[in-house]
Length: 328
Image (cartoon, rainbow, N blue to C red; front, side, top):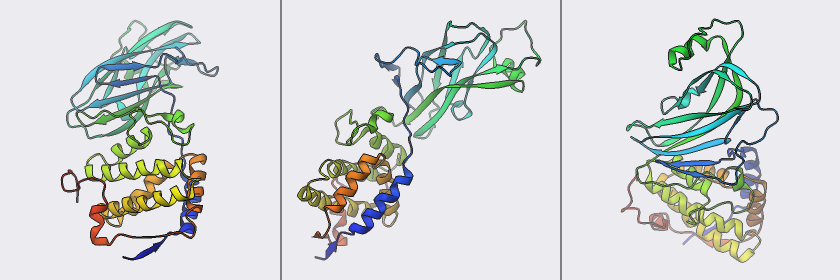
C-alpha cells in the first residue's frame, strides 16, 4: 500500500484561486411551479419596492420545473408608476420555445392599476434536460412611429408592426425554467439566501446543499453514475466545512474525500480533475466557505494516509457502479 502526502500548499493555492470564480447566481424568488402545482411565498411583498422601476412585477423571479410534454399556466401581475400606451409584453428569445404570454399587447396602461398576465408553459416532448434562463419585460412604442390606433390586437402581427419603433423598459420578471426527467423533484434554487450560512440550505435533508444538488443534476443530466459520485463527494464536503476547525475530524474527512476522488477517477479518468475542480468552485461560493476550506487544509499539515491501489478504485465508490445506469 502506497503512502500519499497531502499537498497542503497546493490545496491552499487552489483555494485562493477559487475566489476569482465566485459569481452571484441567485435571485429572490416568490413562486415555484412543479407541473400544475404552484407554491407561493406568503412572506414576499405583493409588489417588491424599487423606487427606480417604472414597472413593478408581483415577484422578482418565477422558477419553473417542468417535464417534457407538460403544458400548464400561471398568472403574474404588474403595476406601472406611469401611464403608458402601446406596450408589448416581450418574452426573451431563449424562452420563446417554451413560454408565451396573454395578453401580449396593451393599448393603454394606467398609472397605479394592476394588470394580470397569463404565462403559458408548453414543453415539447423532445426537449433535453437542462436549465433555461431569461426574462419577460415590456416594450413601449416610440412616439411618432406608425400606429394602427384603431386596433387592440395582441397577436404577433400586431407586435411586429411596433418592433422597430419600440424600446425596452428594463424592469424585468426573471424566469428560471428547469427541464427535468419524468418523476424527478428537485429542491428550489435557494439563491442568495443559500449563501447566508456556512452549510447553506438543504430543503430535502439529503445531506447536500440544494444549489449543489441542482448543479450536479443539470450539469450532468445523462450520467447517473457521475451524479451519484459527485453527490457523495458533495455530502462529505459538508462535513469538511462543518468540522474545519477540528484537526482530528479534518483528517477523517480527508481520508473519505480521497476515496470519493478515487471513485471519480475510476468513472472519468483524468477528466475527473476538471469535474471535481468545477464542483469545488460551486461549493466554495462564499468567502466564509473558502476560509473554512483553507482552515481545513491547514489542519492537514504534516498528515499522511494510505491510498487505495488503483485497481480497487471502483470499490471506492459509495454506490453499486454496475447496478447504476450511465457511462463507464
